[in-house]
Amino acid sequence: MDTYVDVTQESGRAFYQKFYSKGKVVMLNLLRFKSVADYTNFESIKPANEISGEEAYNLYMKHTLPYLKEAGSKVLFLGKSENFLIGPNHETWDFVLLVEHTSVEAFMKFAENKGYLKTAGHRKAALEDSRLLPISENKTIS
Image 1: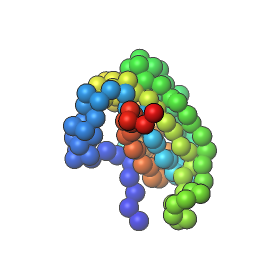
Image 2: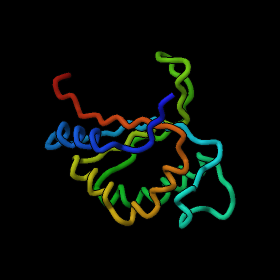
Image 3: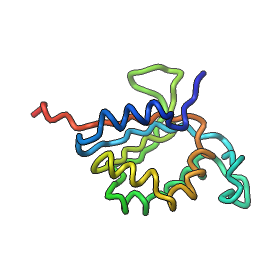
């Protein structure tokens, strides 16, 4: 089974081209955690004791929220999840997260912030798998 934790250059380029100048973008995050966080290659931020993937993700969010706010972005929703009501039974997710960015430029400002990048390894240590779906507002429905 394929897993996805990092953006690829191709998908990043397609996202930028599609959503640039479209205004606000909401990111739907589906997150599945490792039972034990893996801090391989992230020794500088590794906790003293072994922690779960969920605990590592909570550290990621604690360090990330100030940088989101600085970029004008905000968390709209964070909740626990498990199985789909409609969808594949084999696909389960631990958390669902919605983050609103005022623009692609705001998202890029956040994602490239040096302070954010120093502790972003908590996310990679935490996640077994993830999905990140950018969503633009549909203004045709009234």
